[in-house]
Length: 570
Image (cartoon, rainbow, N blue to C red; front, side):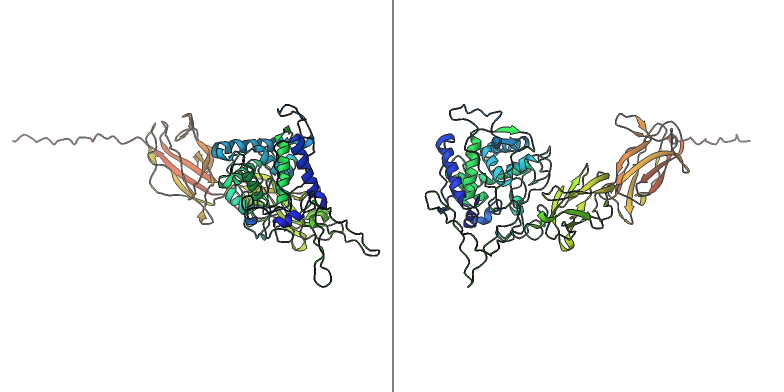
């Protein structure tokens, strides 16, 4: 795999020479301390490599753009970080904060590793262009998923699906995910919750940066030692060219950076797979007789330049690269979806179904569509995701994956867009309704009584069901009413107490537990006596009326029995 990626170099055969020249220039004049990381002819030793199967990215393609030869600080300038400088030295604010937070966390948890945040910045630049120029929300989560190509063995590693499509939307093969480009199987081991939101999200820059830091520090590495640093970078992607590219950015960032607003970072353009999308580099067709045509070898520093490809013979057509399916999509349309609805905590039975079509109106198979949850809601796709990528199948159709409603009721938006394409979107209004119950019953039949000015000794306990099954999490309203046929709130008789100890006769913040059971708060009585009614109602139509009796307590002193008197004898 290392040799394979070593052949997919930036700007064709001249990349190795350019990369080496850039490293040499930085090392010679503006970036003292750059270590020679070798050429493609180097054979990595066991001390500086990691096996391909252990790479964080699955050896996915990466960006090969190099920094300008002028470092952020001019030669001889003070080492203080500049407030302005070359655009390439700018790192989006949230992304930069995530790198520095990861450095601080590891300085406490693994101080012997000596992780510099500039190393995370270098890897983040090479893997995703700093989260696509800092296109993240206020919490650090990418606005749209960042996915590497399908690792199906065609030009890349062959890694079968390990997450059931939870992170990458692909249930057949894995893809690198997020700003630090972890494959799902690696994320399962190294994923972190750096922003303490209860979720380990590879598309969140805080989570991903800390995970990358821990991965680089694994095995007791000391990243201030060049051999350990090389081994750490190669464990991320098993390619010597990758090592050279990361080291070039690392040294560049060490000379100084500055913060730029999120979404304004410089976007890289060149990739190690020689494409801008996720398609693998085409391979040359075999020559007659079954012997494959030799591929031109890239130039090496100090070596002979690669031979110049000969022009095609007259009459021989030049093959036109086939664009990836996503690039051919002209629009998307609803493929017969009704309104998505669900009960709080339940599954949506109606899911968005979208058809991708090209300019001629024909279906596009194999295009990547992004399904995204928008709005204030607890609804989530599998894997606690708010956005997933789904590839169109037969008929150009893509269906949203399983979607579970949260406890927040009301409407939110399910948005569908074409991955990486500024085409019109489709928005669906999804509705989450409250949990329902169609029956309420007391769990006991003991008479509920109290004395005037006292309290009811026994609590009111009820159980809710829906179509005979336990109804958990159902909202219940309890009201002291005037009469069975007049549900107006009573102003006298039994009452509850609020947090301040004041009398209230209606409670709305009540919910059944996991067993569908609700125990009402303690009930008190005022000076009025008689039989009073408590009514309980739920979403779904369940109603229960409970009698509450207030009567004076019986006199505990028994009435003495008069003693009969005897008549005088006559």
